[in-house]
Length: 338
Image (cartoon, rainbow, N blue to C red):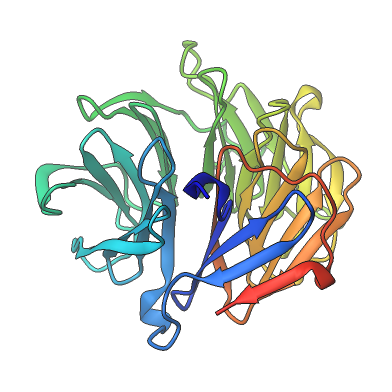
């Protein structure tokens, strides 16, 4: 069996747990530990998970102790592990660019690592006072964080090519705070969307002169307080839809055609939503949250399709671009492998 046909979902936890999940076309769910669980601890928190190549064979894993591991999905083993020390704060993002691994640190620094000898290169730059999200699309890198406005960088030159402006001051003429928690690139155009811990969802278009958001939304609870948004995902099938999740376990589907009005809300969460993934070909939403559940929701009827409890608190999720699920899974369909 080709490695692409093996696990189609990978999740990481705050104790360093790393699991492969296979959601089959017949609805059977197979789960397997891909890392020895005997030596896991809070020092091994998985803080970043991303593909290491276009073929989606290698997985880059960043840990809270600033080490990086590379997992080979074809041979089902770790093929590399090395330190990427820089300051004291953890790695929050990893990406592959040409022959280099790009590492982003909570401290606000970004560095290139040499893939051949895993040594730090001289190329490094500061993207802001704090970095909470770093996403890469081809040769472009978007960054943002606490009081760190959205920026777009050209990785070929490491030059800043777009620096977003904040929205205008509020009705008291006070600066609107910035706390970007997650960023997404739209697949078919130049636009970038981000969510914030102040409940904002904003879209910027670097191709136009305007530096302020072209669309500014606010996601609020029933009592009018803004949600602390922690994760987002763009629906590739319908780019006018964005899914956002909050620290209170609230998940909503926003319609960008109507100024971000929530058109669906999803239930069953009992903890902060840490990561969201939406496949390219199916209207479903995959999530991991601090209540230790991996869930799959139907996107448009907001029904829970599947959930599985894990002993570890989950923090990261990664799915294959050809992820497919064509039938409903149940608890009786679960097979957990040692």
